[in-house]
Length: 329
Image (tube, one colour):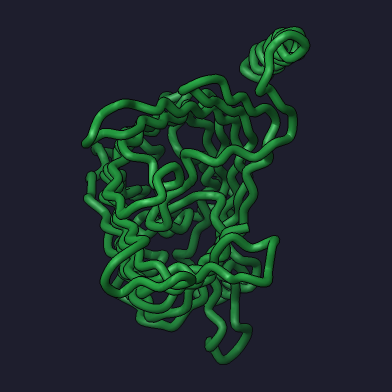
């Protein structure tokens, strides 16, 4: 039923958009927007990001803590559909698509991929230019529909079922909507800029929860569905383009996300705990002169502490400290 309504909405929208495009200037198909881009500290986004560092994470069984070195890889694209630039208001429609993998390369036996996340959605964004000395612009994003599913790595799952009779797999899959508002969008200001983004994400079908449980995957364990839903966040970003510690090609950037997330609790029938999670990036954006296809390459010190962001591992907490490189195409 949800798919039927979504397809009907898209058909109607694109029909109206096509008619509108015949009469209005500044209206384009398949043109990427230049506003409301992800901040580098966002836990999940279409940014291309590879990180390496030390992870301290609660084990999948919820017993004890494991310390290891890991690669954390994000790959994504925000597929542009429609872009309009009219006077002081811009808007765009796109399809954000991303995958997120955590990999344990130094494990001696199989160097397993621990988890993969997959996301796609439908996004409507807008941008207003303001005549205000403090709040110079406003950007917003509305995702009426998005999907996330996650999958434990094959080697990790096989070893788990072979070596631990209490091991289980939970099928993380859900649809959600998301709303956000940005003050002083940094992409639209060529000056030293402090930006703020506030957002909320909620399940489209809260009664379905974040995951499903299958008897053949949970074994003899007694597990419970999720109860709470929704999360909210505040992002701060400071970019410096002139003055001390800057050059023509190297620009300092500091990005912080504070996100209130639900820590899954498969073994408890009560409401899950909420945890504040902090994601911090401090570093430089390098803007190459001779590579036209790459806008910037970010080099960052990265720190994270809070609920593990990796699929089934959200039953526990996780900390990460290391180096991160972000390629902005």
